[in-house]
Length: 308
Image (tube, rainbow, N blue to C red):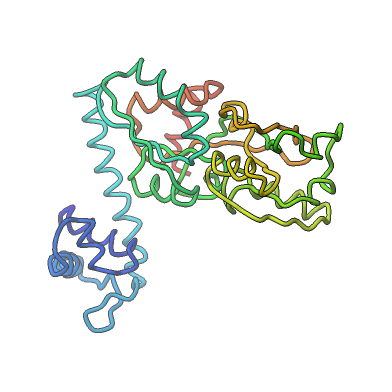
């Protein structure tokens, strides 16, 4: 039994049993992957995968029990490497942070700047995508930390921490009729075409829930992942924007006027997630506490040591 065999099994399950993709990920050949899988099955004396001819089609019942053990073995092997790096190279390494565009653009710059000052020998790699992909990257070990507003608390394999609360803001061009209201209601807002985030991004679920609960239909004419893109189209007159408050607070001068919407939409909570059971380098703890200073190191360590 060797780690290449274990990785072949794990990646085959992750890649939908497509051995060509597995071979690309592991930088080997498809016959090599097939051989590694077959050799481990022969050593264990059980079939891990169901087959249709030579093609893998799923996990057998024994395979469903074996796969979590393989995941744990590979995780502990990675933890061993991380622990050895911690003691041999305490202040150097690469911290990979998977996050959304909004967090990367508006929240993380000052955090990364302070972190780099404190840990100058640690490289920071930012990966930007949807909350679902962020969770997948952390679960697979491709990212050390995931930061997003939606979805991270829904994955059993992740430990997530609430970091800060924020609200949505309405943005309109200067002179827009909505600026004449002392307080805007959902009825007035629903009368205009809207531009906001894609489904699953940056608190979009709270926006949809507010209109649905109030019984108002909306005309969402354009969606995007990027707060800057949303505001650009608002500036062109295509509709009224609903964006994250930090995007307005830190945004460029673009001729837009913000309107308070804290009374319209539920507040959002940005969460930071790490993979359950993983070994965190000391500089990873440093980054977490800089991003969420209200968290306590003892609470983070207690959560990481718990396997339930």
